[in-house]
Image (tube, rainbow, N blue to C red):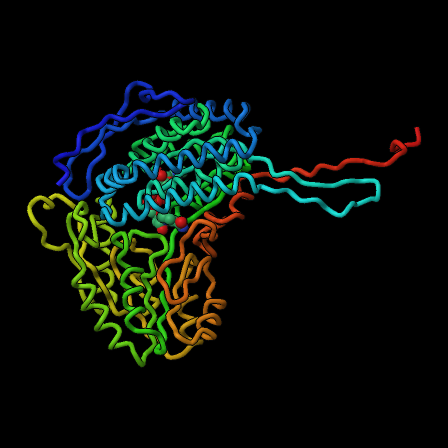
Length: 496
Ligand code: NAD
């Protein structure tokens, strides 16, 4: 498969210059589908992180934040255009770094371009407000000013997509950025750094630091020179980020884990619900924060739904991610692979009924060193660990419900609240249930809920803050109130 890929050696992007990590440290990056090495990646030290933060600060003190918004918008549009031109090449890079299928990666590249274009447009709409005068002799208005240096920390499941959700609004509002990709999927962030420079993003506005271990992210969260952390990752790490960031009172937004429900009523279009539920679980090999892995099905159609779902799931094509017909690619990390295996064992030991999968598939020799998992489904209780903890793999759990109120109770019986789907042809019911579910997004009769312009983020343990929306612009800005005295007589409160 990736025999044609060439080994690369990457560098850090600091202040517009590409440079090795101090001391020349590197770590190895592998293709999870075949175990082949694909890159030597610069392994940043604390000194490198300091240099990146200092470069971002210098750029923030420069012309970027005060540049005409229309000019910044043009640069972001250019960036979007350059990504679009190289979409196929970057998609393949993402496939080799992450193990996702080429069709998924190409879809993501389209969404990345859309995200940059959306925020390019938003750049010129970063409006303040004018208040009713607090006194007749006053004008009062607000301006939205960039929050400063943003530390963007992203996970491995959608490497460039999740970076774009942070970098695009940060650029639009005039912030400067230190971007840290996951250690296992660093390549597309480095490519973004190259494209940003080419698009005319001034030196130091976007810095990219890569590192083998967690300290790079932790150093950023502690760093007094960073004003805001935009974090996507697990709930456990997110809580740590919030606690550490509090010491320097950084602004923090957290996009964290999930265990999202798909609620299927007996009046749903069964075919559409099954197709949507399959996609909701197995898209990106289930390594998806908003995966609808808890499938709650009304008792009257439960057996039929489960039979049709599992029959189709077992036929999904698992294998070479570079093959356009593959539907489930590789598991990105060894630890993640082991975690999925362990959860399947826990499911069996808790008494959940395994319906399909639960093991690695047999694949051809070229993929023998890769990490793959067969589409898996269990019938479970909502309280089983496999049904309530985030597995982050291609594992569905089915739970049955009697009626609308039980469906709502089960959907909400989770510590998470990221997303949900409701399948019903009774739009009154679908909307009632959508309203009652405590999650950041609810998709009715569709598995898709993520689009630029539509806020995305979590309730409860799924985090706080929203990405992708116009309100996201607020999370990258501070409000400054400006009060102007317009009276004829000078003010003289002390009568001096
Ligand atoms: P993770 O929390 O292990 O790591 C996320 C990022 O944080 C990585 O870049 C990592 O190097 C860095 N990091 C680790 N420890 C850190 C620390 N102490 N301080 C600062 N940074 C640190 O998560 P992961 O395993 O890479 O990603 C999977 C998780 O991400 C899942 O829980 C998934 O649900 C979540 N996720 C959420 C969303 C969302 O939008 N809500 C999207 C994708 C993934």
